[in-house]
Each structure stands twice: as C-alpha cells, then as structure tokens.
Amino acid sequence: MRHEDRDPAYLWDMLEVSRELVEMNANASRREFLSNRMLLRATERNLEILGEAATRVSLARMEKTPEIPWRRIIGQRNVLAHEYGDIDHELLYETVRRDIPDLIDTLESLLANK
Image (cartoon, rainbow, N blue to C red; front, side):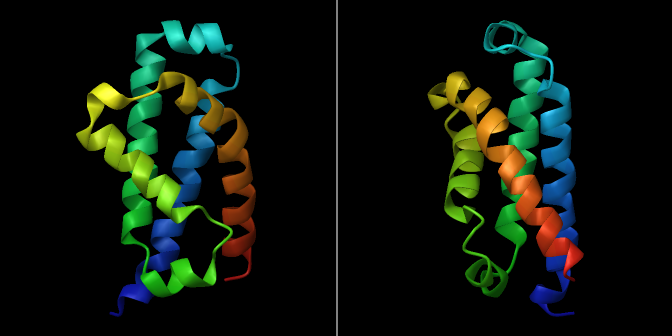
C-alpha cells in the first residue's frame, strides 16, 4: 500500500480529534480553561494527537492542501511532546477557539470530495 493511500484515514483522525477539541472546550471561558487542569491536559493531548496524525499525511497530500497549516499543526505537536515547559496555554485556548473550527471546515470539505 502506498503512503498516499493511508491519507484519508489520517485526515479522518485529524477531523475527529478536532471535533472533540471543540466539543470539550465549547462551554469553557478562558478563565475556566486556564484553571481546569483536566481540561488543559485533555486539550494538550488531543492537540498532540492532531499533530501526530498530521505528521503521517503524505508530502504529496500536504502539497495539494496548502490551506491546512501543516507546519503549525506539526510544530505545535512537537512543542507539546518535547518542550513541555514552553507550552503557552493562552495560545492553546485561542487555537481551539479560532483555528480548529476552520480546520474542521477544511477537513470536512476535503473528505467530502474523496
């Protein structure tokens, strides 16, 4: 099986974890998010999973979908996995509120055209 043949599965993983991120954070204010350790850790983990799935998408698919911020997603995963002391929880909150809904729309459109 070619690497590109696995791309739809990785894109679905990205979509599912993105939906979960939005759902779990839907009712949390910034203050609640920053003070809820369990929500913080769950958000960190799901963003890490999102980034890990992104690393597995073929370079050919990445090049065909420049509207997905691949480098940012993977870079954030690397910070979460390897540079724990550098995590900016304010940035994570903004990412979930602002960027993840757009990513969901893009992934849904991409997968609907498969």
